[in-house]
Length: 187
Length: 234
Image (cartoon, rainbow over all chains, first blue to last red):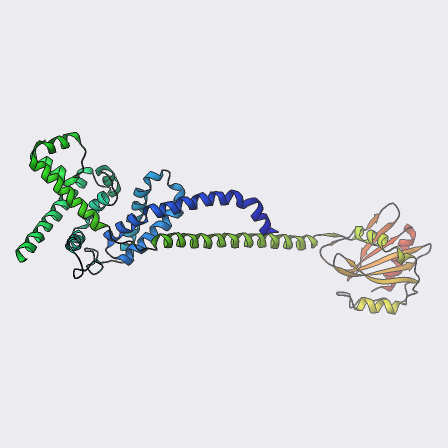
C-alpha cells in the first residue's frame, strides 16, 4: 500500500524533475567530458588520475547541478570544480607534481611519421612547462576562454595572465626551434 | 602600438581580433609572418593537447552518477521505512500506555452487569469453597478467601476488568440479587464509594487485598451484602 501510494502520487512530479535533470547531466557529460578529461590530464599528468578527477568532478557537478543557472557557463563551472578537486588531491597526498609523467605520453617515436614525432616532442614540451604557464595556455586552447575569463578562473589579474601566456608560447616556440635546428644539423 | 607591444600581443593571443592589432599586423610582411607562424604553433599545440580520451569515459560518468543516485534513493526509502516503523512503534506504545491509565471500576462494573445479563438468571448454587478455589487462582488474591458461606451464591465466573482478572459473583440478599465483583488492588484503579445509574445502585469499598464492588437494585440489599462480605471475606 505504501509502495503504491509512493508510486501514484509522488513519482510523477519528482520523476519529471529528475528526468530533466538527468537529461541535462547527460548532455553535459557528452559535450564536455573530453575537454574536462584533457584538462585534468594536462593538469596532473597521469591518465588514471585524470580519469579519477574527471569522475569526481562530474559527480560533484551532478550534486550541484541545480546551482548551474546558465548552461553556457557550464565549462567554466566544471573547470572550477575540477581545479578544486585537483587541489584537494594535493591536500590528501603530496605528489611530485612538477612534471607530466613522460611514460604516460603514449605516442612512440619508433612507429610514427614526422608529424607524430613533432607532436610527441610538443607534448613533452607542454608537459615540461611550469604549471603557472601551462594552465593559462590550457584554458586558452582547450577551454577557448578569453584573457578576462582566464583571469577570473585562476583568480589572477589580467596582466599576469597575459604575461604568462606570452611566456608560455615564447618558451614553446624557442624549444621547438631549438629541437628543429638540432634535428636538422643531426640529420 | 610599438613593435614590442605588438609582439607581446601576438604571443599572448595570435587570434586577437582587436582592430589596432589587426591593423598593425597588416602593416608589414614580417608582422604577418610572425602572426601566422604563431597561429601554426597554436594549431599544433591544440592538436598536441588533444590526447586520446578513454572511449567509455562518458558512459562511466553517467553510470557512476546513476549508481550514486540509486544508492541515495535507497537510503531515502530506507529512511522513510524507518520513519514509518518509528511512528507505528510510538502509536503502539501510546495505546498500551493509555490502557494503563486510570480505570473507573464503577463504570466497568455496571457495564459488566448489563453485558452478562445471564448471570442474574442462572442458579448454579455455588459453594463457598468453590469460590475460594477460584480466588486462590487469581493473581494477588492467593490469600483471600471466604471463611463461611456468604448466603446463597447463584453464579460465579472470572471476568476481565481492563486486563485484570477478577471474580464475578451473584449473591442472594434480603430482597433481590446483588452482583459482587472482587478485583485485585492495582494502583491505576479508581473506585467510587457509591455510584448508580437509572436501574442499578452500586457500592464500592476496599479490603486488604481487593476492591469489592456491589451492584443491586436496592440500597438496603447492598448494605446487607456488604456486612455479609465483611464478616465472611478475609
